[in-house]
Image 1: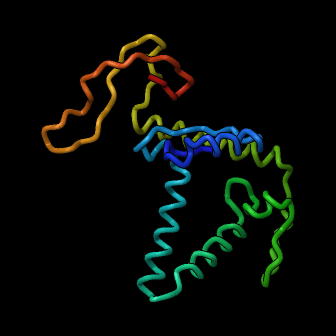
Image 2: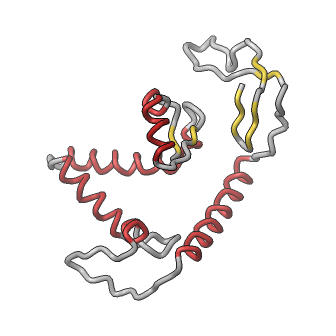
Length: 172
């Protein structure tokens, strides 16, 4: 489960819940939306639906339920199945019959999804000029700080030592 470093995801109760249910909790970098892109994209869609409901003076809870039902039932272009079908291992029953008979094995779906995600990552890395990190354990680094006014420097002047590095995550 990927989450930000919010206090609700740091509690002892949450950690015990994850451990008891075999969930690996992965924390993303605070205040860096790209690290949690899937959630940010979904939140953006939900917010847009809420704005439309408010503008049209509709019941926001009802509109969110309709949006989520549609999202869960629509076939995803990457997997070829709907999220509900992947979760429940069967098609949802509804008013309209799905005429597609396209079936794939879970491993094929996961492989196809991973392949498309890898292509997207490569494209994004090229566009942003991403390079492998040269930071290693024991290095001294500066930490970026929030801008409080126009005179605030980009980085806090306190040096921190890297104590752990795991692919793209660094602990100081």
